[in-house]
Length: 248
Image 1 (cartoon, one colour):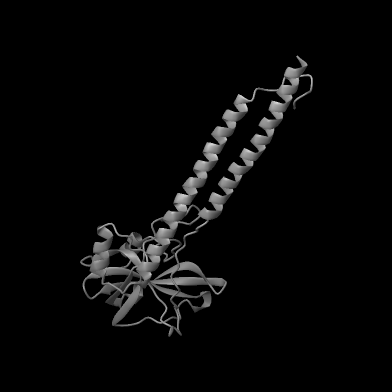
Image 2 (tube, one colour):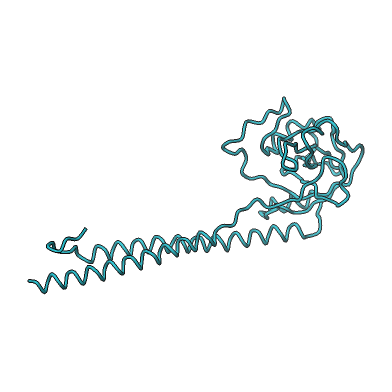
């Protein structure tokens, strides 16, 4: 607090502090703008992947090895489910407890694939369809790059309890022949409109929050607030110092 009988503080430290604060806030806002452009490009890429015609498993594998983002790339292959090795993942269904049913499949061209067949209510576990023989399987690739979350329990392959996506571990627990080539991603079945039974395929959605515009507005808004408060304070200091000088 500035008292009338005291010399007001110098102005230049306030100016320097304001410039430093503005530089930090504006740089954070610019960074969020860049993140916004990156996120929008990523979402556009995922939408383009999902809208493109399906490819076979070797093509999808080659795309991934070449560095392409294969999340939501649509794939189609003929495969046979290994129904006796199905896996259940704790999930939800219509707001209640449910399960995601994951079944390994051996493709006709020699790949071992982990397939997310969809969800079912908790009471339906053990009462769902298990297709026999070769099936035409179509879905989208899910890469699950983040692994186990901080609050996720440890998966229990022996007890058939899965809490997070571990494709490598699921392939190891699948019981499929070692001679098959492991497909490194999950394939999530897509709804067909005729999915009357269970498990029921779920619409594939990108779990990507895009709040960068709001963050950018916040940082730029704070920068403007700092500028306004500092300008008022500097103006007041100048007035007080002029009054002090006039008294001398």
